[in-house]
Amino acid sequence: MAATQRIMALENVPAESTFLFRVVDELGDEREAILVATGDDVSCWLNYCQHFTHINLDKGDGAPMRDGEVICANHGAYFAADSGECTFGPCEGAYLSALDVTVSDGAVYLSDDEYEFVGPGPIDDGDDLTSTSNVEF
Image (cartoon, rainbow, N blue to C red; front, side, top):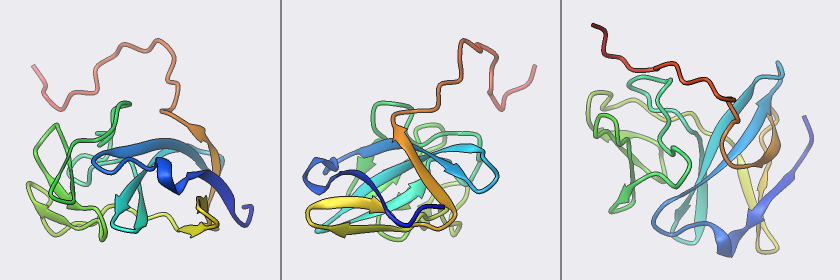
């Protein structure tokens, strides 16, 4: 994968939410990732809860946050923005999957050897309206 790829200006990373973007892995699979402000730095995680990994933390308009933690709106799991550790909820003790980013010259760059930056926003899944619910009847 490419060395470093600019994601966005550091000043545009939301302070109380997340920035959603797309990456592609070494196999060509598109994934979603989120940037999270952590004081003067940023952290980057794949956009999937560790309780049920098909559940997105950021559903397109920023993940909910509280006291420096990203919240899974589906089951109330809390993840520390700086470490990715689940501090409360059904997956307590699990960690979000990290992506390497660097901050340089006022911008955030994807520097992870396993991923390539695709663009901002969620994966376009077309008009598939099938349910991804965990509830079965």
